Amino acid sequence: MLVEPQISRSKLSKLLGINPSAIQKHIEKLKAKHIIKRIGPDKGGHWEVIEND
Image 1 (cartoon, rainbow, N blue to C red):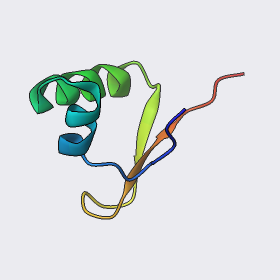
Image 2 (image 1 turned 45 degrees about the horizontal axis):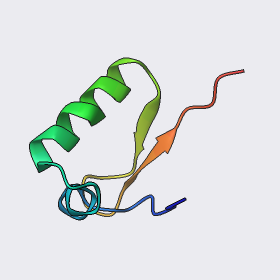
Image 3 (image 1 turned 180 degrees about the vertical axis):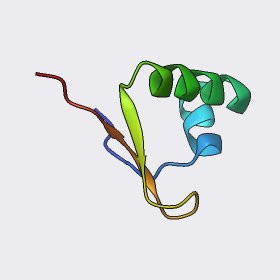
Image 4 (image 1 turned 90 degrees about the vertical axis):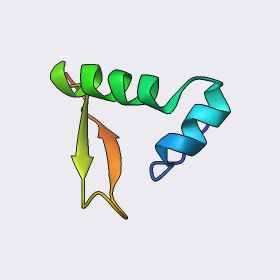
């Protein structure tokens, strides 16, 4: 399992073999479902999974 909270969209798209815009769409869906949240600024920040009980 890859654990790299500060991975960029471009690096993630290369790793997964999908378009960076597809990565953005997935991020938006996860944010809308309150599955992930952004910690910190656009540059230097990271995404965190919201744990539900």
